[in-house]
Length: 610
Image (tube, rainbow, N blue to C red; front, side):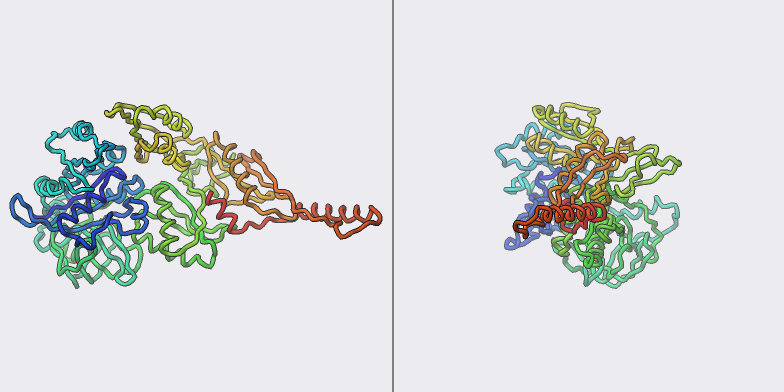
């Protein structure tokens, strides 16, 4: 155990985590030269295309130290950088003793740097500050060093410099990891001492491992990603889930190099995988522990459950695909425990699922994976958040979907979640950002100089405003130089209302949404204009209306299809043509009164894909 080091790389998005991981794998000869490629730990096509990490990836490296001539095992967990996947970062940090805090020399400390650093500090991990991209002509190493000293209160000699691109400084980084990150230790004794059911236990034989992630295989069932806290585990051992109270026989154990490699056993301090053979969902859970039957250990570590912030309904284009969509979502949930779902039905769209996501990027990634990996053609409704509505009878309801938001006059008050937003921006973009924040109902409660002509803004903002293209607008007004991160704040009173769309005086429930009262008219006009564009003409005039608080605030119409009913007549008495036109007008009035507009799936798809 003295020769094992477990660590993660944490950083703001695009600061070079995956590139540095490539150099570490290359330098330790973990991956053969002929198999080496960029972002070698990013296995998903989406990750490689977008240049981002979505899923944490563990890998085991072997390294011969030049300082003491000993062989070491270095277990790295590469983590995502985007704020939507901060939950992945928090899980990986529970399984390690240290973290490399990576900072881009061309950008300095960014908003998400602060968020990930706070997570690592809360877990008492050893932090190694590392400046990356020192080879760049835009690198400002001195200013970045001063920022790190100010942030961490550390000495300049503690800050390491590397280039993930060229490999400069990587050998020194490996030696510093060995010297400064603590060796793995016997965590089980500490855990037993915190347990209320203390008794005399032979810790040497007491096996325990923490589940920090898992995946699903059609052939092998659930494959657990574990950190061994104490003891050993091997094939055919009978293992017990502490929380799930479920037993299974171990089918296989091994390590990540970075693909799975079969081992005879896993020992205390190591990070590896365990094949369970379990094919039922809901048994394996991140944060649960696995033990042997003679263990007295209770589950004392655990993780907080991920809280979905954004909700959207997902429907198959064809109802014949509903069961395939269910199977696809359940498989995705086996590898993404932050995805929440429940079945729902809509009169217009049929059966589908109400899904909870950690943010807009998470929603985008999940729907893209459903399309690519499971060939699902989807209709995705307008994203919404959770509202807390107090009805006039005193009952408090949580509303996850606009369809169930009560009618105006039936409720007393509405509360909504706010976020605490951190934005770090160059000073010359401050004016444009302040204007943007005003448009998104945000208020700045703190502002201070971050150095290098940059300002740190602390902001309160309604969570719903994130879904109004906020990320893209911030990047646009700051020319890409502003960075941001956020965390969930408290619930506050909300000035919102439900916007309903009626087509020929029939409410179309999937088009309903909850909007700010201040923007209700603007959103209503956008919606009716959009429908006027995409709805086909009928034999009668079609009315499109937007209702708020029982009143029509926007209206459009589509003219009836025209047909010249007198075109076949030539000459003769004019009254013949007049009678035909009167008959046509009577028919149009009858259709106007009784006619119904049937909305095709394609119409919903076009509207949702706005």
